[in-house]
Length: 122
Image (cartoon, rainbow, N blue to C red; front, side):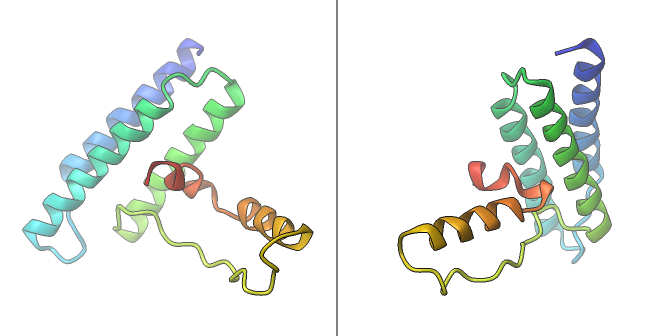
């Protein structure tokens, strides 16, 4: 990891914890605010620790972009949790074969950048 990338990653990590420190839930309830603050901190720790051994510059850039997207979406919607994605159900595909693999591939490709690591951790 280059020194510039390292500084960028550490800056994002600090930014997330500053956001968590100032976070207010949309409902304004104290219990919910505390719960959301803990979620933000735990999610950041989990994902940063999971990706600390990534050395590929393209993967690092992808992780940085995902982090920035999740920060912006969380601040915009005032929701710390990843927004759900709406994909068509896989009810039309058979349980095996090319059609199922094709639909699974399309679903994986269409997943937004801010949810790439969410399924792996949750």
